[in-house]
Image (cartoon, rainbow, N blue to C red):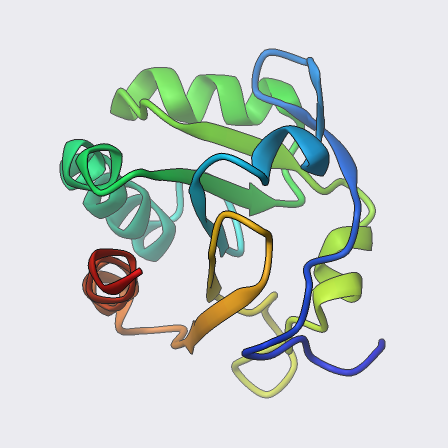
Length: 153
């Protein structure tokens, strides 16, 4: 695993499939809006569902602040689609099936290396990281921290 990306770093170029099985290129995500990219361990687990729904509940606030929200886990596009439908998630979920993007960002594992980490990155419209937040258990804080940063951009 490479070094963890941090504030001031440019995000790497990537291409991943979303919950509709469409290829999303990072070049489509940067250039016009700020970006909140949150890595989470697994669809439909209690903590991940709470986090995803917290982002859903504040989605309009992010949109009004000029930001887009994107979730990333190793789950398949099919799993993401079911998760998004079940919880009415209005944002893109990307399938990082081989954890390549997780490795590119240097997202650390948590819980003694047993679980994929839960880390949120907030980028300005140019794709430069402005803030990161890492907490496996404090899922709602990911949304609070993101909103605070987005409103300040």
